[in-house]
Image 1 (cartoon, helix red, strand yellow):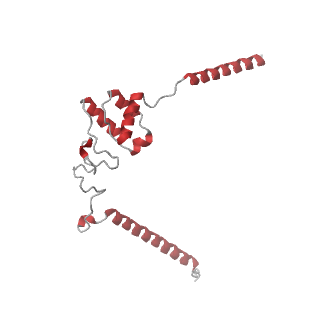
Image 2 (cartoon, helix red, strand yellow):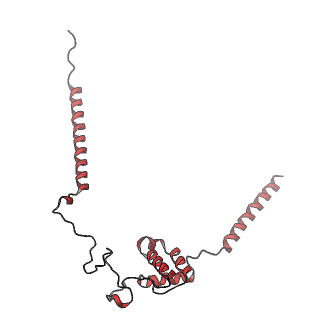
Length: 181
């Protein structure tokens, strides 16, 4: 009886393993995007904007197929979403200036948008951050003052701890007074 039971268990396990291998072998790998989604992504890769109208499902497929590193560090999703919204209206999305070197003509087909990111429309003097006025009272660096105050409090607590330990050590080192009358 033992060999027959072992044989049945072995055959069942082998059959289960073969079924799993067959299922994995016949499954097609998931594609990141369809051909039209890849075309939209290629259009964005070309110059950072969408220059053509595509079927509406292509925009969604392109957004789903954006690689994780691009999703975190580039504006592909925003540009494709803007292009989708414009395609719903039947027009091309204004894409701003072409980021390729040497293309400084805003009328060359990009909409001539602002490139400084401030939303003011002034691209004459682009800045990473506005200037800081250090003459007024609002220029006091509050976080620096808080950190300075915390460091002084910690130094004072450490100094008090040191003094109390030193005091306790000198009290323990003194000879006891004679309590005998």
